[in-house]
Image 1: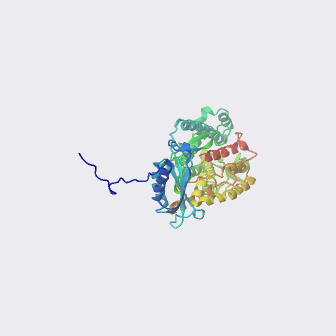
Image 2: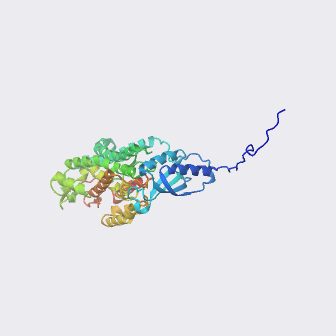
Image 3: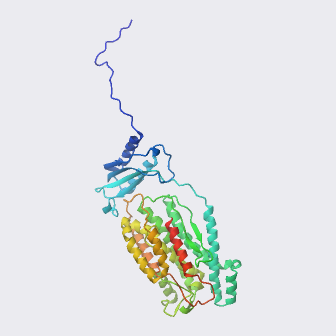
Length: 450
């Protein structure tokens, strides 16, 4: 028989305190704290209690209404802000969370300073947009092609009217068999608008952003443009101000590459006529006035003569391309110019909203074309595209390009875009004031919805 060994103090079982189970919320907080600590020396932290529906919620396809902030950390970054964001973003992606970097107000427009505190917010949900079908883009493009062909055909009739009024009226009264005559304008304007939107598209794709193909907007029969412009829809927020600038500036700069040569070719192919014979007066920008002076060797209009803008399809397309580019470069809200200005000076861009709006209102006194723009900018121009990382500034090269882009806006801006004369030269239908205002208004609306 085996006897039990006598129990001693050393042989007694060790009784340990039972630790309470760690909740999912505490586990998540610990994970977030460790991830953020890899890029920041945390000085303060705050966690938001998760809602019951969030604990087992599936991965969100985008930042839906259910997305909310779960934590905030304040401290000093351990590395440069751009690299820190990329590192933390990759880690948080495993949890379907998203980081937001913010600087203190007095340093929003300065490089990240390791001696000054920054804030990292963590939000639930990540952007994961699903692909969209391409056929609506193709259908709108075909409809817009038809619409601009009609305008081009009417312009061709204006050209023919100088030699044969009867032939011009025949074309205007039955334009559909003669649509081939409008190809110069149609190809030119679609080339300019297409380059503009594809500039945005390829810049966004270069940064691996989800973006739609261009949507062209037709406006047949009542417009002297034939289109309300085009737009793409960016389906993800931009990571930092570098990305905001690249996407915002790429469109106007790409469009100008085609608009200016088309304008110069159009000027070379048109003629100078008495001002009293003009049906529509196109406003002058610095670039347009300079181009006319170089082409004809004198400043036009000179009080008696001016170029016949609707006697050349390429000239009308080039002038329209410059106008559309200038409208998009207005440095307000979510227009391309607003993106460029915000990427350059950050939150200070919001302070310029009312001064710029007042300036546009003063222009509306000179040219009523701007009146509807003032109303639209008043209601829709206050929203700016804010990147996720507001700490990383523009590099010197992008800063120089941003200033250059804003200078281009000044050079191509038209204070008084369109005005009608009371004695048109040819008996060709010209649009009413409302028809001239409508395309401009819809272009802005489509841009603001991007």
